[in-house]
Length: 261
Ligand SMILES: Nc1ncnc2c1ncn2[C@@H]1O[C@H](COP(=O)(O)OP(=O)(O)OP(=O)(O)O)[C@@H](O)[C@H]1O
Ligand SMILES: [Mg+2]
Image 1 (cartoon, rainbow, N blue to C red):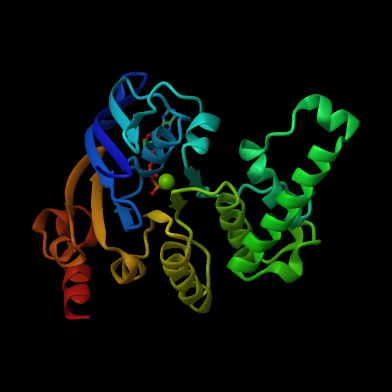
Image 2: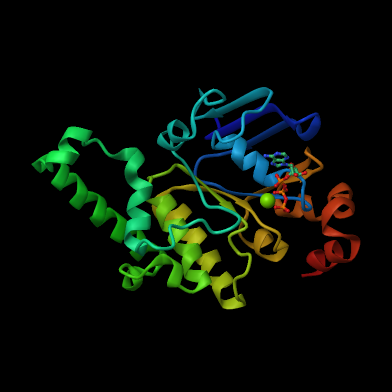
């Protein structure tokens, strides 16, 4: 059984088809990439997986549990976390507070405890703080924990988002174009970080990314979406040599260059 399993997922807005009969899966602990041209429906697929969009038909299962009718916070609790194509942080809040906000889905202390600040709630807050700092350390930016998130360099903001997602203790992390806007050096660090997320935390990663060089380096499997249709799925080699993929996305020249490289 896959960690994430989509079958026949179709989504449309006002009659325009965004996803058509999509089958897709992510095994536990794997790094899988989703590629395809602009407007193919990649982010929409993330929004379906996380419960923000409600597909008209199909099935989405996390560890065998149907999530199609669940609310986003219920899907988070099942172990799905994400980052956004455009960084979404609370800019006026500190880096640490941003990461701590990711853990709300896991907290137990009730409203009464919170108002009276009973010992259980204080203990929980300390635990949240410790774990958030650990997540910041994991992504390599614990030194910036007290700064307002909006004042951080762009590459750091992206890492805060990853730390916030990790703070929910996911089984699967969805990253929507995490390399966009990063320098070459930052991209190298991102590749290493994704490897550590899988190897040290045992978290599967599903990556949407336009940097095909990066995708080819870290993915165990790749799926290709084009106009809402999943046109290919396979290993890096299979995708690089798939004529339909080269035509729809990689481009003949780029495909050949990837093959040569
Ligand atoms: N809430 C919405 N309402 C109407 N149309 C939408 C909505 N969300 C997405 N779409 C449409 O779905 C299509 C796919 O968009 P989506 O953002 O999923 O593409 P994408 O593959 O992520 O593209 P990009 O690589 O540019 O980020 C687009 O035509 C978009 O306009
Ligand atoms: Mg997108």
